[in-house]
Image (cartoon, rainbow, N blue to C red; front, side, top):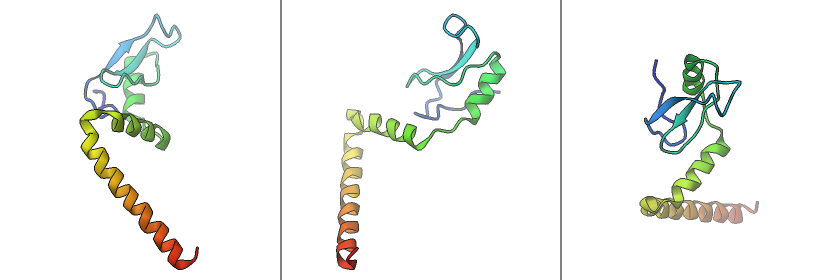
Length: 102
Protein backbone atom coordinates (compact mmCIF):
# COMPACT_ATOMS: atom_id res chain seq x y z
CA UNK A 1 0.00 0.00 0.00
CA UNK A 2 1.25 3.48 -0.88
CA UNK A 3 0.92 6.81 0.85
CA UNK A 4 -1.84 9.03 -0.51
CA UNK A 5 -0.91 12.58 -1.57
CA UNK A 6 -0.28 15.14 1.15
CA UNK A 7 -3.58 16.28 2.70
CA UNK A 8 -2.20 19.81 3.08
CA UNK A 9 -0.61 20.65 -0.26
CA UNK A 10 -1.69 17.73 -2.47
CA UNK A 11 1.87 16.77 -3.34
CA UNK A 12 2.59 13.19 -4.30
CA UNK A 13 6.17 13.60 -3.09
CA UNK A 14 5.51 11.88 0.22
CA UNK A 15 7.53 9.21 1.95
CA UNK A 16 7.91 7.16 5.11
CA UNK A 17 11.00 8.25 7.00
CA UNK A 18 12.89 6.47 9.74
CA UNK A 19 12.91 8.98 12.62
CA UNK A 20 14.51 6.66 15.17
CA UNK A 21 17.00 9.33 16.28
CA UNK A 22 14.35 12.04 16.66
CA UNK A 23 11.49 9.88 17.96
CA UNK A 24 12.97 7.00 19.99
CA UNK A 25 9.52 5.66 20.95
CA UNK A 26 8.25 5.70 17.36
CA UNK A 27 10.56 4.63 14.56
CA UNK A 28 8.70 5.92 11.49
CA UNK A 29 6.83 8.99 10.32
CA UNK A 30 5.08 10.07 7.11
CA UNK A 31 6.59 13.17 5.53
CA UNK A 32 5.74 15.51 2.64
CA UNK A 33 8.84 16.62 0.75
CA UNK A 34 7.15 19.77 -0.58
CA UNK A 35 5.39 21.39 2.40
CA UNK A 36 7.38 19.44 5.03
CA UNK A 37 4.30 18.19 6.86
CA UNK A 38 4.95 15.32 9.24
CA UNK A 39 2.34 12.68 9.92
CA UNK A 40 1.74 10.84 13.17
CA UNK A 41 4.65 8.63 14.20
CA UNK A 42 4.29 4.88 14.40
CA UNK A 43 6.39 1.87 15.33
CA UNK A 44 5.82 0.29 11.91
CA UNK A 45 5.84 1.40 8.28
CA UNK A 46 2.34 0.00 7.80
CA UNK A 47 1.15 1.96 10.85
CA UNK A 48 2.46 5.18 9.29
CA UNK A 49 0.76 4.40 5.97
CA UNK A 50 -2.55 3.63 7.67
CA UNK A 51 -2.47 6.83 9.75
CA UNK A 52 -1.38 9.04 6.83
CA UNK A 53 -3.98 7.69 4.43
CA UNK A 54 -6.86 8.12 6.91
CA UNK A 55 -5.91 11.59 8.11
CA UNK A 56 -8.14 14.57 7.47
CA UNK A 57 -7.21 18.14 8.16
CA UNK A 58 -9.19 20.51 10.36
CA UNK A 59 -10.68 23.76 9.10
CA UNK A 60 -8.02 25.67 11.03
CA UNK A 61 -5.23 23.71 9.37
CA UNK A 62 -6.89 24.19 6.00
CA UNK A 63 -7.12 27.95 6.60
CA UNK A 64 -3.44 28.06 7.56
CA UNK A 65 -2.51 26.31 4.32
CA UNK A 66 -4.68 28.74 2.33
CA UNK A 67 -3.05 31.74 3.99
CA UNK A 68 0.39 30.41 3.04
CA UNK A 69 -0.85 29.70 -0.50
CA UNK A 70 -2.19 33.24 -0.82
CA UNK A 71 1.23 34.67 0.09
CA UNK A 72 2.86 32.85 -2.84
CA UNK A 73 3.44 35.31 -5.73
CA UNK A 74 2.63 32.55 -8.24
CA UNK A 75 -0.99 32.73 -7.11
CA UNK A 76 -1.38 36.52 -6.90
CA UNK A 77 -3.90 36.71 -9.76
CA UNK A 78 -6.03 33.91 -8.30
CA UNK A 79 -5.87 35.48 -4.86
CA UNK A 80 -6.89 38.89 -6.18
CA UNK A 81 -9.85 37.34 -8.03
CA UNK A 82 -10.96 35.48 -4.90
CA UNK A 83 -10.54 38.61 -2.81
CA UNK A 84 -12.71 40.58 -5.24
CA UNK A 85 -15.44 37.93 -5.10
CA UNK A 86 -15.20 37.77 -1.31
CA UNK A 87 -15.42 41.55 -0.96
CA UNK A 88 -18.47 41.64 -3.24
CA UNK A 89 -20.21 38.90 -1.25
CA UNK A 90 -19.64 40.80 1.97
CA UNK A 91 -21.06 43.95 0.38
CA UNK A 92 -24.15 42.02 -0.77
CA UNK A 93 -24.70 40.50 2.68
CA UNK A 94 -24.34 43.88 4.39
CA UNK A 95 -26.75 45.45 1.89
CA UNK A 96 -29.34 42.68 2.43
CA UNK A 97 -29.05 43.01 6.20
CA UNK A 98 -29.45 46.79 5.93
CA UNK A 99 -32.58 46.37 3.79
CA UNK A 100 -34.13 43.81 6.13
CA UNK A 101 -33.24 45.81 9.24
CA UNK A 102 -31.21 43.01 10.88
